[in-house]
Length: 140
Length: 476
Image (cartoon, rainbow over all chains, first blue to last red; front, side):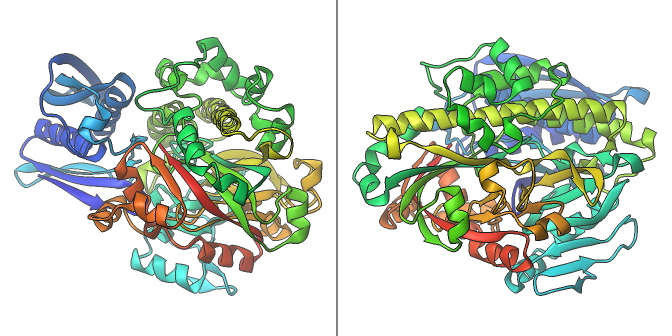
């Protein structure tokens, strides 16, 4: 479940899902909802993203920043993702994602404006009952 | 929230909990009531800033205070390197050295009105937003970018993208010393290369305006502003290059902070001592990104001059001269109270008062111009730096009106309305890449800049000089 948050200067969202991988996929969808009025849902190009981070919060920030970079600087809109996340002992977490993408078409998708970065402000990624919950603020 | 009134527009947040020093903020009654409606979220952020090591009293916010991430917007904090003072990339922001510059001219409003529509179209065509179609007739090499990172705006002026006299009318001469391009990652280069000379989206803009009201004849004389004359206000920053630098160093500082015994109350405040390997590297990278931002606004200025020339303006009295370019997201070493401190300004403007050596000679009798953009439908202000700012706010002042409505709420409020048409009915032509940006930036989404100016002028941290009203708004 994605809930958009009111933040005076920036943009935020809260995510709730049953798995950590699902949470990261919802973050992708929420990002698409922020940057496009009508996000595409089909694409023919594939890319693989591999990231690691010392904790889940940093991994989520890196994931969102990587996706924003792919959209804004590479013209690749990640319309679908298969995500695997592993704990790597003391080194933290590793993520691998196989992305399906569509080319960036600003007018067709209703471009809403650039994302500068995901922030660590008020960020948490935590277990809640049987599932996962995260809250993210983006600088726009 | 525990605060104490010190004057009509000044309040003190006493040192409590993990705060190292007192904090102070400036607000009118109206601004204070806005702070209450957001449950003092930005004042809590100010208290968080006051917990950082080596901070010099007081931690501050300007009257355009609003809720940010990490630092509040409008935040000013000085750190003493000799007392373990820190640098915090999040306290400078992702858009390193974002700022505004004002161009002045002898063009009269009536004269411009005759060419307004053509000029609006030409400006929109010549100044890329940075997404989608760029300028096919213009590109810079990686070597050009490397030079800009070290030298700032000057190499562009040498290539013909500006007048020689532009440089002395840019804060710090358009170049922060100590830039280290080696501290900039390959990805930051990659992102910066196609984006030099682009406006960006969100609250970035270019406005053609006219001087609507003069409040201070001496200062307007020094600044070359006359009633009814045309000005151009440009707001942009360091684009993807600056965002990338900040992202990388926030993460690095998060890992480094515990090693220096820094306990963070908000991870976005990640910090390292100024006198540490991480601190020095970040300051080198930040200065390089700042130089990119100065150069970016210089190139946008060149494109603006091209657009005015195509519309039939551009020589003699009609020439666009740079009044001043100043940043509102950076950290700079300055002398305050007899010591050298690193002043972080996060959505706050440097506002040096009369007599300061760094100012161009013509500004020294009256203080530097301080540019305070409002919203796209009402007005912006020119202030002058004051002695009061030098003694109270580390030479800082307000940087804008400040949002009062979230972007989501603004889009909801704009539903069913045609804001471009509404603005046109008010005599303002809007050219924008997308409707969403216009909706988010609707005038009602911002506080009335006049409230911010009342508190700034009333508190003596900026002196009201002139008011500017928009005629053309270009948004990325």
